[in-house]
Length: 119
Image 1: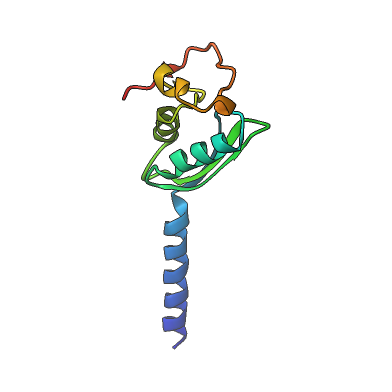
Image 2: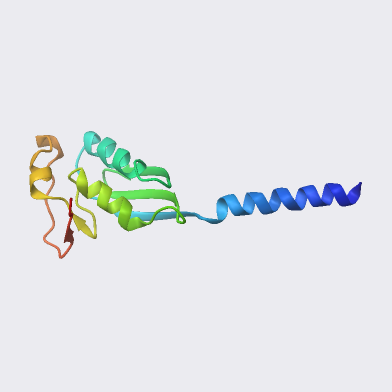
């Protein structure tokens, strides 16, 4: 009986470890300026398969992500965010998409060497 119980406990622990082993938390800079930006940025991030949680802070411009790194990576999330009009550290939103943002969502665009998002 003890052997069966210990086997079940070991199996449970192994399963729990396997489920959480691929989860990763990262912070990335995403440019925006208001609550509508927050909603748009978080929605874009969560649309990427493997993203578990996305929370953008308006003051710090930092997006905290929890994701399964066996399903996605930071670049895929940043590309999805750039596609909805927000620049990140590595990807710049297309000018046409940025210009379609509401006036309250316009932010000071950084002059950086980020890659243009390819549609």
